Image (cartoon, rainbow, N blue to C red; front, top):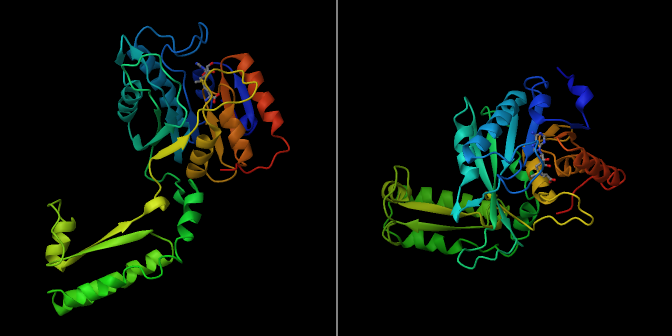
Length: 339
Ligand SMILES: C[S@@+](CC[C@H](N)C(=O)[O-])C[C@H]1O[C@@H](n2cnc3c(N)ncnc32)[C@H](O)[C@@H]1O
């Protein structure tokens, strides 16, 4: 078994299963990785990706995933980015087949599918198919205690919302008159004023972007829903308030270009921007981040820029060398990633 200290900020050239099986239980904060696509590129005879069937490929990934589960802390998470592949014109849905198998493992929860929307996807020759332009980053955890810092994810969105506050200074005033003239009882009106005041403060403080209110006898009723739904609220308390989060809402999509690095020596690099946002979402400074399919070293590069410890595992020596080259270049750089 390795002592964790000896692995910190190291890249190991070996088969990932062999290395992972020697890392202590519950020791890593985040595993973020992108395994080779199924039969997409010939990385040589060793390594995962050139199996005969999709099932064989997924079984191998699951073996790696189980080791990942064992070594992450209960507060940690595992993020797998997997691409899809057509066989005879049929899309295999490989990422989802993998996610379904991973979910069968005890205590594993898929907490988000973060979809990468590619701004500049690779063009395709086949004009009878649309260009695939998305890829999932599946976020798994092994307990409910996982670390999750929504505020640090796409942080510029928080700032954007704060700048809305001045132009919204009159927001919601019209609803006071509407409530006044409505057929709500005095009790209901009192509650409606109170909640209206509250939601207006949320807009002014930048917590939400805007809101709408629906009042019984004034606005058309929405269709039914589960209990506690909008229709119930209107029937029971006389009104409902629909909050609009706008740009400040942290959605499960992230837009980024496909990575292009000058002098790149690896065929399948994932974007530093996305890796950085996920690292900020799921870890604190000085956390330990591991990538078992390191490739060109992107995970380690970003972890280093964001003041986290990294551990990389890559089976091909030439990619280890390239990763080290990239890491050496950031030695004296500003440690924050610019978004
Ligand atoms: C899709 S690439 C990762 C690219 C990486 N995310 C980046 O930004 O450069 C997958 C890498 O996994 C490596 N690999 C495949 N099987 C492996 C194994 N069993 N152990 C360690 N590395 C492996 C391949 O050599 C390849 O470089």
